[in-house]
Structures are given as structure tokens and as C-alpha cells.
Image (cartoon, rainbow, N blue to C red):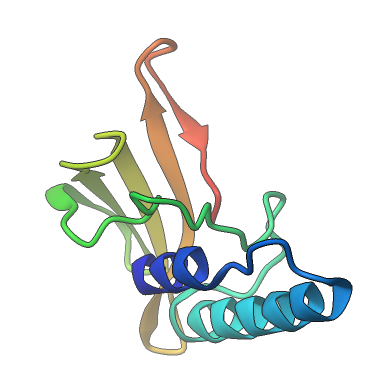
Amino acid sequence: MNSWENWAHENTPKNPNDREYESFKQELNMRVGKIFKEYCTSRDRSYGRNGMYQKPPEYQENEEILEVIDCSNTRIEIITQEHSGFSNKNKYTLLKQGGRWLIDNKTWFDVQNSDWSRGTL
């Protein structure tokens, strides 16, 4: 997702006409679709499959793993800490499907409410 966000940020057309925007949007969706097919569970996502494609990217390459929680034989949660950008704590829920661990969702820790809030995955 980090690479996708960086690509999207760098390639977003400036003042595009309709054709240029549609072409960019198709490429953007094709690229993110490949990522979700490879690394994520297939289900409807209330927040869609969007990233922010901003600088710095929403998805960081250098998140530190703080804790791995074994919930069951088919579910784990990984708590991470970002060290750039927003410096959020994130929780990734992974499900084992077809012998592979796939990301099912991402939430972040809301400091104001002391609670985990739904993320974009």
C-alpha cells in the first residue's frame, strides 16, 4: 500500500481533462485491486479500498511491531507503532484463509477516546 500511495501521489494528473482523469482512475483501481487480491481478505469494506495517497503515505514501511496477539488458529492481531507521519498505533487483524494469512482490517488507536477506531482497510 505504501508503494501504491507513493505512485498515486506522484502520478495524480494536475488539472486533468475527463479522459486523463478516467485513465488515471482506472490505473489506480487496477493497482490497488492487485494488492487487495494478494494480501487482503475478499469482503465488502465499508470504507472502500482507498488510501490517502498523500505525503507522507498513510501506510508506512517502517511501522514497528509492538505486539502479536494469537486470538485463535485462524486469527491474529498485530499492534504496530508508526514513527513518521501521524505516529499512530495501528492494529491489523489477519485471518488464515487457504493456508495464507490475509489482512482483514486495520484500525488505529484513538487517543482521545482510548479506543480502537475503524480504519481504511
